[in-house]
Image 1 (cartoon, rainbow over the protein chains, first blue to last red):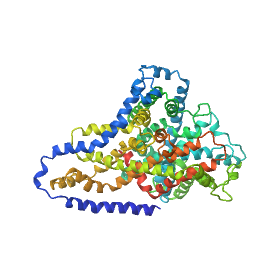
Image 2: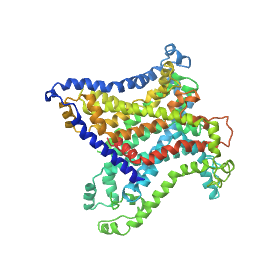
Image 3: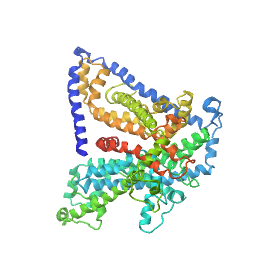
Image 4: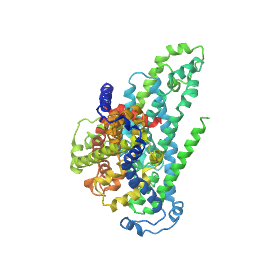
Length: 330
Length: 303
């Protein structure tokens, strides 16, 4: 498999080659005096090249982001989907209501639970696999890498459906393993205490590959000379890992932690498909809660406030992580 | 690269604390043992990673009695296509498949064009506001999609684009990730090359299409794969932006089917068949193009 893709990549490069060599030569031959007034031209061109993106960005991102903020201070409801301007300003009412809303607090707690357990597990396992692949193995490396990365690319809805079945207490895969050793499997997704850990297990399974690839890239960027120098100085395996690998991997660690955390804070599909937030809201996450309030009950003003609380939390945690992990390097 | 430096081995054999003296033997004697341990660990991990896929594939071909057997049947004794047939009777999968393909193709093409254009401007053109636009792109990378869903739904309702391809495509027509990726790649093109073309009187549009784009074909391949797949797997927005089942994409159709409280039990086989049909093409494409995937992730993560 790897040889065929290798060839494909190669031929892509080869194709790019001649195109390059030809194009400048094939370009229209103008006078050589044209170099000077280019700055104005580039200014124009720069803006023309930026316009399509900027228009799309403005209409489908910037305006909605601001609109969410505005909506969060209103009683925006179903009626206002057709008459947005009729919504009433109610100040901070949505926000104050949020923090006495037990359902919301529970969803906040559930999301925190998911992140606090899920992120370290994902990062640790991703690093472990990357290190094993990068150092302990010279055969079948691609094979393993592909295997560990495969869950990342699959459709999360389909995968969540599969996991629901895998965890089925009577006829699922895990139930089968339990009965092989003479035990009865618990009802993972039907239990208030086990539903969330099951979901975390699935998320870790799905995201380990991303983190692994990042770490492999990070490990390969460490110059071999640095390691060799350390070894000449008498550093042992563990010292080398602690003294060289970990510090030099810090930027990768930072990036991997931040993107995993952001992803997990937004967790939605897993509970939507696997448990619909149950049992008794034990897997209701902030995103799922927001979706329900917004699109099932059409409390859109209230849901907007939720979206902003989540956004502020995400920004806060990201900034904190950037600070903490950067300071450690010094 | 070599198998000698061994932080990997630390985790498998932490009892070994090699001092200076033994360092030479360490390279020789326990290496094969360590290596076996590493292979065993990785194989175990790989088994866990692939188990849900195997379970899905096997279950899709089980008969209904085998599907509900407790304890479960591992491998179907008589392979059947019943689940696929039942599923196709209940769900118009070819229609959802086409919807997913149309949306993903449109999203991919528009991303390739628009993200490359801005990527080129940011990498190679000097213009007032360039840094501000780049800051905007970086900022956009960090904003969670959830923040836009509600007004986007209102906007699309107003524009009467709910249940339309345009409604599904437009919010994803140009992503910040694509701009970032293209800019990274285009920065490595030597300025002299573009300068030479400018000297010869080539316009920026010509340079962009005829010189820059052919040079960044590998990046374009990476971006197409990621964008196509992102769209193929996208769930939240298609869920919100479609009410008419005729406009459902594959994931929305499957999820609607899977979470429908009105259907009785015994449809697990159909769900496995449906998941199999959605996941299989993605896995095949991924395995065929895996190099581009891992490179793309790595490139985006490095800087």
